[in-house]
Length: 413
Image (cartoon, rainbow, N blue to C red; front, side, top):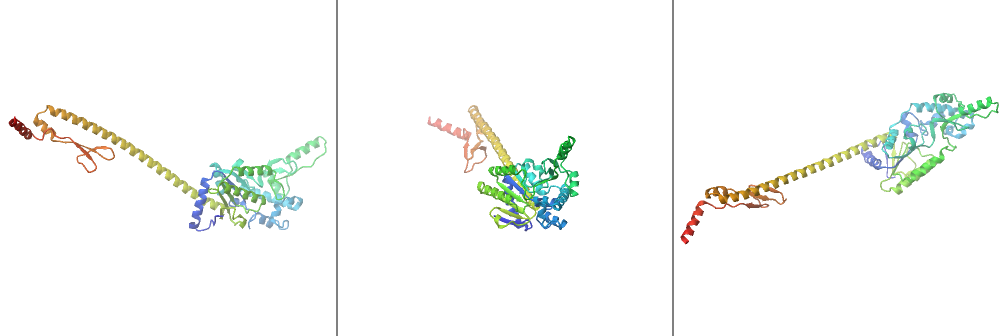
């Protein structure tokens, strides 16, 4: 375990840990999520083992029938008529709660992971079907309350309000398929056969899961796909088979992704010490609260990343504009050099045909061509230590000097 913190800790304590967890979520490509009843509490559906959970609720409602709430979710109850009646009545009430429930922030968070392509699989212990929009990526470990099936022929039907009303009376409805077959046999004068009754499609303690083989295959397949993130939320980690799977999945993540892999546990109650070497982060608190903190940090991270991208693009555009300006300036410099060279040639030729006076006037001016170290050419009216100056010289300094030189040549001759 790297870190354990509570969602009720001061912000200065929580913030760095939530930042780390948000980073784990942001970089994950293959995440596995395991959920328990704790993620549905905020939707109005009680969990199982808390002080106000289903077990205690059952015990309060039927104190003379059950010793422990867990007994009402054990397959052995079908051997006791009174317990069986309590079971059907309670399932009808639970169905009402589920029908009024809406997905929580945690359910939406998991759906978001699926939409982003991050979710490899979600294994849920919940029977409320609030994760049903995950489709093929959802594995219901304890069945669901959206179906009922026949205890005899296994025919499956939707958990309709008609069946719910019958369960509420404490009596299970007859299986329509068995009833139809029985009526047909009676019409033909054949011996009647036993008819099955319907029950909610939930998996109780001490009974085999009807889809156990496919669930085992899904677990083995997911481990082979080398997930990089495991999030366990809202469960007290009491089911032996689930505990084994979580430890196998955590080991796979730590082995295949020793630096970037992450295993996170979120629940109101702290796990036992056996989990200290399994979970990297233990978050004590409400799952929705943790999701809110993490999503806020993810939004901040995305906003920062987007700002960095915009800044890089702006710098790139500015650099391209600067390069274009430099190219344009170089073209201007080349034009200046060409024009200056042409002008010099023209003036020189003209001086040979001009009168001395006009030559003196023309040559009294000068032009500078400055060559800078950057190899860019500029015209300048002055020179500096870092420039080389090429200066056009006049053909004659003055008319008097020319006359003086002529006289000297005459005397000599």
